[in-house]
Length: 330
Image (cartoon, rainbow, N blue to C red; front, side, top):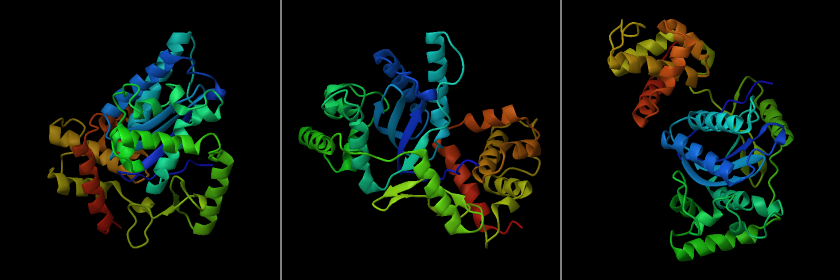
């Protein structure tokens, strides 16, 4: 089965779960957990995602984050690749450490406090402690002001989204909320539940459709159907043409007609090539197609896309995407 197309909107809170290969215990002690937090903080510092909470279990990791304009992969690949290399070197081994890509669940605003409590109660459900504050494996002690916060963690934003003020009383009420949820709180996050929900969504859509990442509500797990981003008057996104993208980029960024050549290294031209690759990839098309049109290789294309993870670059991609969405390109 092909992978699910992940759609993303800035400002949405996500529950992200990353599991280790064969359910192995990769985070055996404080050194490994602190190592993961250091690499996660370093990756998030170069992104615009905000970490709201975490639970670092021995065989898997729970993260709660608020999305920005950058893609999920802009920080997960960096953090997890560096962590995998460090663990392999530490234990004198090789091979993959993380099992496939993370499980990602966008949350409705009313579910954020429930999921933060669920994440903080992971060690309680595992019967390792009787209270979430008895362990440093989660961000709960940081929420209570008992431990210093990792660089990437924003406790104030997490409390705000849960409806509590960032003061002693608010932290105490948050602790009461987490205690009240306790070990009985369960979330069915199995792959079989997601597979069945995805099949129901595809059957309901009938024709070819994009399936977003799941959303959970009081009605259970659902996979929303997403209109292709570049669809115009019912046309398929597969009809998008390289020439159209390049023409729109020249118009929006003010680049002349010869300004995409691989040997032209002027900063505006380099930025134009970067935007072209990002727009093409956002449309669900293979990056190598645009790379060939630009006269560059796959490695150079990858370096271009990841070389400028700034808000300005994402805004340029949004501007070009909007122009393409409203124009007649067939």
